[in-house]
Image (cartoon, rainbow, N blue to C red; front, side, top):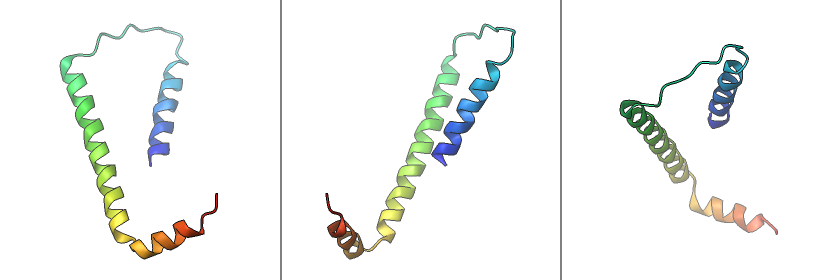
Length: 72
């Protein structure tokens, strides 16, 4: 999912550069900054929660056995 979102962001940025007309965008407002931070924090908490839930689903013994098989 993060790779797909990264692709969409890069694609839209690249597609917007194809336009010949250069537009001047105004400085971001306080509301825009707060909204962006809220979305980033919400997504971060969501992914941290999913990661925590996934780690709770795995048996500790199974993880230790797989880690012991790794040779450096």
